[in-house]
Image (cartoon, rainbow over all chains, first blue to last red; front, side):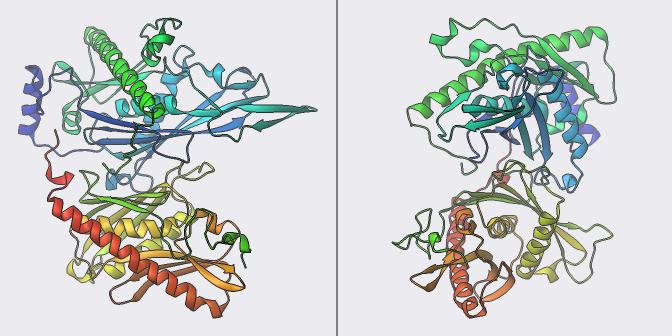
Length: 310
Length: 250
């Protein structure tokens, strides 16, 4: 992460504050900072979203491509994450400087999405064993203000919710080769089922307590942080009419990772994971609510596009 | 020479613009809190973010006693083009763009004020719909203004292409992707408009020498038009009185 220089006194101010459930920006240990989310911001991508979490800024674009499925999983599509740390965020990311951080985030996302209960790759299948969709999820980190993992996972889920995949009009079999004809009409498309896609929650251990959504200053005070990937609830992502047909999804842990030089006791770890699951559930329902509201505004043509101009 | 289909019989381009018409420009200064200066600029569907850090102490290898070193990086988001790009930067095209960017910006910055220092300019193309380099220069200028770096003048860039209409050459200002589709020439100029001097000129494909003058003057006119827009944006931004940098983030 981008290192913030803090003095010992500043560090102890933050650490003692966390013990008493008061953080330097007025939040309690389980509060998130305010977020802004907008989908459909990049017209060259099939789906996109921009998330601004206080001063962390993330832009996600999803592009689709037709690919052949892997032989050991013929009925499933493919999904690939690519994270790019833009030098706009900090000069340290110039050239290949941000690659290590980028790889660690993209690996974490790949692991969280790997489970079939987290994201159903079968919906990307076109022709069993012959053709499938490959989703390239490109994440661009524009500003780092702490808590990148959470911001990235929220933006990715929003972008996938927004992704439109063109319908296949016809498939011609010519010997062993398949020739697909895609629909030209941009409105002739299907949406992905992303209700169960996981969200990552970072828990930073500061002193004896864990906080969610650490700011950049808090990150530099923590000895160890824990990232939990928790699957979402599909009920949050469908309208009340549809939700009767959708099964309630239970929040499950799809990935856990730790980073930092310190260590945690088993008991603290379990508590932290539970705290993470609770946080992820409330994030998930808030995200679903916001996305459904935006889609509704989109349909009624009330939506105004802001992009970066706001 | 490009075919006549670039201009319709009514003399309009494929996106409905007249030959001397710019794309719509939207811009905003101070979009980010961490850089010393930042700007977002969109010209039509080409969208660029620029950030400026510095002036700060130069890296040992780069330091120059003559003046400030302008360090530029041009990168394109992997989803910025129709076809997905594999790498956002480091390929030959973006390295060349970085050099050209430095060339244009160094001409505008009062480099002699900061010896042994360095200014970092990073541009990120979010969406490319033609003339990305020009939009980058304009965005970088705005970001430099936002960072409060002393400039001689605005450096503004504009591109021009050429089409034929009724057997006569008709230069097209601010070429979008559709204007370059048939492989016509593309002339990009970065100019310091108040003195009328050219900081960088680049041309691809071939163009008869006889027509260089008309295309160049159309591009220079485009630069002056864009400068008026940028100047207004800077004034509006300053009149607003504060930027995100000034607000203590919660």
